[in-house]
Length: 351
Image 1 (cartoon, rainbow, N blue to C red):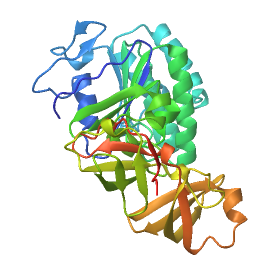
Image 2: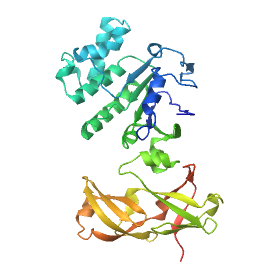
Image 3: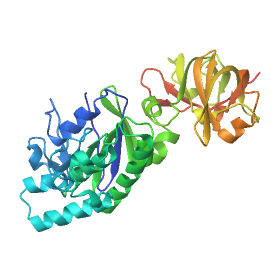
Image 4: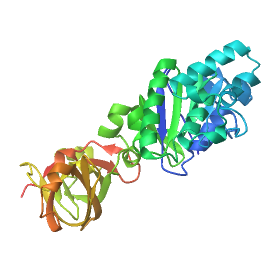
């Protein structure tokens, strides 16, 4: 990693997301003092804590693994950080019970850890990480490995808990949906550095980097590389041609760009007047409840469309080779080298 520069606001929930092996856990451990950085500083509330020992940093840490003591009760596991700090027993009992109630595990306090379920163990691990009053809480992908329904519920509980505590949370994850469910702000870690830090409401709708677009949302985004010609006025992909409304937005040295097409913007019927069309072969349709994910093989490679399931179920001809469409206004363009967004506007190519 290099040139990592990220700031979380007071009482903010900042989600740092990234694909596997991008350094999220290393970053978390450096912040908590469990690993030493080669250069740079870690600051909390204008205090440089870079040289402080982990115990003196006032950071609550929830690691990926449960890391619980199986021979101890749920109560003792949660209370462990407070007991090590030699806090008064009455205060410890009050804090443990309050945290357990917030996470819905207060009825388990007398049970041993080896007597409870995996989801309950995860709640115990979270409670232990958050029970001590701290300036910052670092949660390193704490829901990884849990089934989707449990992840969804725990993510909601964590968001409510953060609001109740009113503390600053730094949440690291490789999940494509958790940043949108949880974050006030979302930062993306890629190629060893923070590529973008933006409000969650903007991170999905208008990502300023292709790195952000790649990690957020499910199904994953479609990317198409295409040449840009005619002095930056025309994009000719293997699927369709586009006219660039503002050719000055593309550097004169650029001859290829990367197009972002979100799956929900790919349609197959009732095309608007400004749509561009392309042929595709339907390889698979996944019905995932409210939506259906349509896997396509095209001249530009594999693409994914996402449409309401009710609409897909009523169609019997969505098989074989079909005509698909996308609105040029919904397409975003990125520089191939920097990954930064280009301020392009597109419309159907003028014949």
